[in-house]
Image (tube, rainbow, N blue to C red):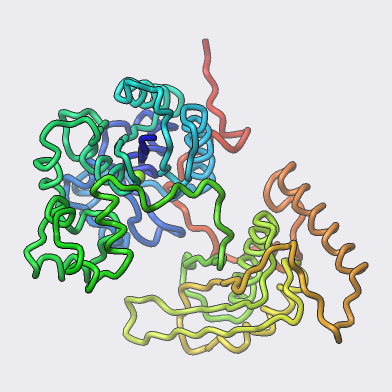
Length: 421
Ligand SMILES: [Mg+2]
């Protein structure tokens, strides 16, 4: 059964443009949290030479000069658009592996004799429903479909669709894909390949496998076989449980008071514990960290870790444990610019192991779990932070500097545009 890789082009920028037609066909960049640095660009901004990861305070003048639109990131919008995109794709395929926020591998029924027709229709439906341009690569394996997707994006005459299975002169097309662009080839391996004279996907496919195995092991051989059209990477239809969950943000201005650091850490812990509950997981280890700006001459970075006797996703317990740790990472002599929380050693809610000497009774645990469930439901139904922890409610000026926000037209009732007919 053929495999297609469906990938939205410049996803964050495309989402912003789909809810604000005034910026369609305009160069556009998206900034990270608190407008820190450039995390996404559309094709027009790329063509103007704007690089990824550039801090906004360095890029600002150039962006103004080139008349480039700037938007603060809006993750609620991107997550919502991603859900809509994936459900549309699901309706049009046999099986789906959601690979990232804007990418999915799908199996297409072998009955669809005209795969190109299927791909054209799907592309049209997605553009019409969501305003998102997508590229579709089709192959017999995941690696082939990844390659085909790259060719779909880079070959204008193929209009966003490339089917490697039925193309004539397959070798010629594979030679167009530089070794660095092959899925699964990292920087080091690409460097080694270049030294061996392997410069493109076709040469990698035809390299003697014993040479490749020596350097890249069994994974290298699997990749080579996939390029030859033999399926080695199976579509994983069920999502894998997460190993870690991290929540971190840069501050809108440097902070020097421990109360502000506590406040930031508390907000991150509450957010991370909500995520754990939605993932149906407990954390057995929690790490908090803070650091100064990367662009300061007096750099400081510190972290602290706590192991929990009984793994939990209870906000109250996680909050009390982490607030104690804050004293260990705070330093009054530095201008702190970022803080975060990492929930680690995650395990499924199904396998909770109680502790022999713990004073917490199973009855008490169940009661607390019901409380968390109620809080989550209230916040989901009536909006974020309808019920919140006292410490998180205090208003500090280090939060949420998002000067260039678009509306949340797909997730917030008050932002829905009004059409006068
Ligand atoms: Mg993409």
